[in-house]
Length: 487
Ligand SMILES: Cc1cc2nc3c(=O)[nH]c(=O)nc-3n(C[C@H](O)[C@H](O)[C@H](O)COP(=O)(O)OP(=O)(O)OC[C@H]3O[C@@H](n4cnc5c(N)ncnc54)[C@H](O)[C@@H]3O)c2cc1C
Image 1 (cartoon, rainbow, N blue to C red):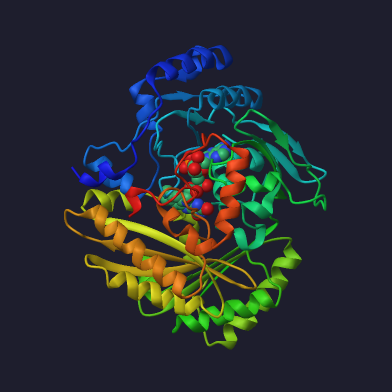
Image 2 (image 1 turned 135 degrees about the horizontal axis):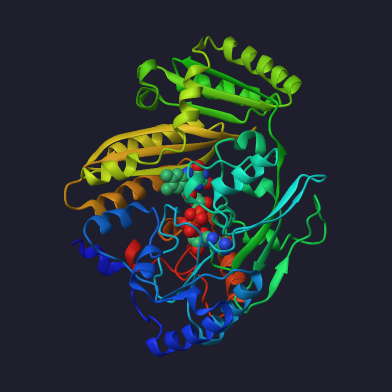
């Protein structure tokens, strides 16, 4: 078994007497059927999709366990559960569906796993103002299905749609595959309802905009469970699109394709999907296209006239760069496979370590960051491949998503640390932001000071003010000094 498991912080779990006491009180709030100390429940909520969790799991190891799981059914219950934990100074970790990729739900100091799955209703659908108010524990795919049945879409499709919750999206500032048209989760959010550690419930106004000081509810976007619990949100919705247009083009050079995207984005078009793969990933994901050219796939949807106009504008820019039109069928293939997330677990079982690292660049460093990160990743001993694609684009730049696979032999955790160190150093040296949408969790906290500078002190003070006993998801978001694990 990897000895690095000892380096996960296991200091000072709350005393068992305190937990037993909490369990009795919690049962009075949510009913005894919604409180568990059963090992199966503790185990099933103690981890997420962080690759290090997978390495440990394959070694039969568990880094940290919560001491109790509870399933509140309403905001009022969340409020009472939090107030009780705050009084007893017991850690609380909000749990959505555990699809985070950076160890965000690992209960580093034990405590209570607050699983939100039973808060899963759409509270209201406002068809005049095109907004849905939804509870945070609702599964992403079930949310979209319910909207579709009513003739709407939520416009948010992370690859993890089927294994993530609305609250997890909000807490991690998620981005969906159709984000260039519908926006990232923060653009889709009109307002939030959240509960502070002391049990105070508050919510923002569901109007399009306010100039009434900073939006306090929006502070919870990206807070990763460290400030309190998001219990519901009012989100923008759209009528199901009238028309969908699919196209794909290949380019000889990645930088030509990037320049084309910059130009059509700055001309004002907003296709829902813009994905540009390097030659290696083109070969992996679209084998019929070979691995010598870079493919750009596009999906435009919405009102028919607008879609047709956008398609014409984009085509003009693409063809001016001597791209080859490769038709709509590659986009259809991508649409079919886009939620398939099985590759990673298959590779892990074969002894590989695979991870994806998403960062955010401007146009001037979009290509150089790709080159620098690829070079840094390939220089790590054990790396087999380092490839990339761009999957969310803006007038100002793009998200770059690097994938690395290595066969490091026995020391998998060390290899994992090395690829991250190499990738983050290269990203920071290029002036790119260290995360576009996966967030910080446990592992990426190490680079939060590099990312934010003095801004991190501000974030730490906000944390101290809202959570003076430090009960909310301790050790995450880089809010505490770098942990032994990370050094
Ligand atoms: C294969 C795969 C593909 C992915 N694709 C994408 C993608 O396309 N786009 C993207 O953005 N992300 C993606 N992710 C990352 C992940 O799915 C997202 O971060 C997702 O938003 C997490 O949701 P969750 O419900 O699983 O949260 P969890 O993993 O349960 O929690 C994540 C963090 O949020 C906190 N949290 C959860 N719910 C709440 C709440 N109600 N209140 C306060 N804090 C809360 C937790 O404490 C934790 O810190 C992917 C992950 C995987 C494994």
